[in-house]
Every structure is written in structure tokens, then in C-alpha cells.
Length: 249
Image 1 (cartoon, rainbow, N blue to C red):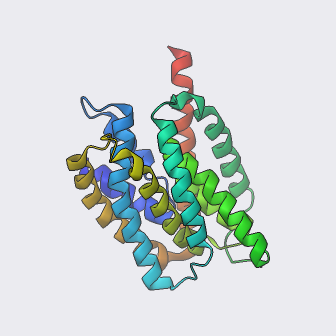
Image 2: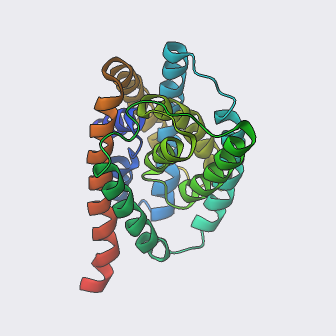
């Protein structure tokens, strides 16, 4: 479990998608319900996300004028998504996510120059509107399911706001921290999160998040793009298997 937490923190720090490892690991814990696994995953992840966000901030000194409004909206959307998650079967959403992930993978693979360098972004008002819409959509998804949140955020920032992959990843960590906190604002008071297990995972996530952020900054955009495609491919396999499993029984 600690190894899964460390790996999840590392992946989240670089491109997002750490829940791909951590959430399935939690679902193997005897007696843990799916909603408890989702809530405990959020509790563990928030430590790694906070660490990687601070590491990026200290190293890159990026402007947060886009990330902070996104984060505020994403927090509220994730809180709403967490409420929905407690009552909605995950199978309703998985097919939509699978199609989106396949489109993301194909689009990124056929455009090798995507996100390699920062482009000229839209004017301030347009950028803010796009950022808020992206934060709301991804925040709600994170509250309902979670895995791949950072992945969707990064691509959205690259496509809509013309960030390169490195700075998109740094901005995404701030927003992802807010979505984790938003979901926990419902999961912790409602008693769904298993605190002891979540804090143990949080310690492993913290170390993984620090190592991953340092490595991403040192190796740059090309490294992040490669890891990004690997994580998206793994997400497609995981979500595809989860979607098809009920049909094959």
C-alpha cells in the first residue's frame, strides 16, 4: 500500500493520474466499500498534491492569476461531485470518460509539438472564462470519480490557454489540490474517509509528490509529455476494463 501511495504521488506530481494505482489498491482492502476507497484515496492524495504544488511554486515562481480562480471554482464543483458520487453508480460515467481518454491520447500522439513550448494565450477575459469552465468540469469529475483529473487539467491548459506541459503541470497541481480539498469537505464530515489509512497513504504520497515534482522540473516538457501519454494509455486500459467487465459477466 505504501508503494502504491509513493507511486501515485510521483505520477500525480508529473502528469496526474495517480489514482490509477492508489484507488484500485484501496479497493483490495478487505471491508472497504467503494465510496470509502474513493474518500480515502482523496485523503492520501491531498498530501502529495500539496507537496508537489509547493515544490513547483518554489522552483518555477509561476503566475497564479489563472490557477487561483480555477481552483476556487474547482473546489465547489468537486464538493458537488462528491455528493453525487455517494449516490451515483460509477458505471454511468465510465463510458463517457473512456471515449474522452481515447480522444486525448490520439490527439496528443498525432501532434508531437503540442505543449512543447508555450504559445500565445487568449486575451485575459477569454482566458479566465476558459479556465473557470475547465475548473468546473474537471472539478466535478474529480469529486465523482477522480483518477485522471490532473491529466485532463494539463491537456485543457495546453489546448485552451497555450501553456507548455511543464507550466501546465505546475498550474494543474494548484487546481488539483483544490479539487481534493473540495471532495474531502464532504467525505470527511460524512465519515466516508478512513483516517488512519488515509494519513498513512498521505505520508507516502508526500514523498512521491516531492520526488516527482523535482524530476519533472529537472527534465522538462519532453519528459512530461512522454509520461503523460503513458498514463493516458494506462487510464484507457483501466477504465475500458472497468466499463466492459459488467458486460462480460
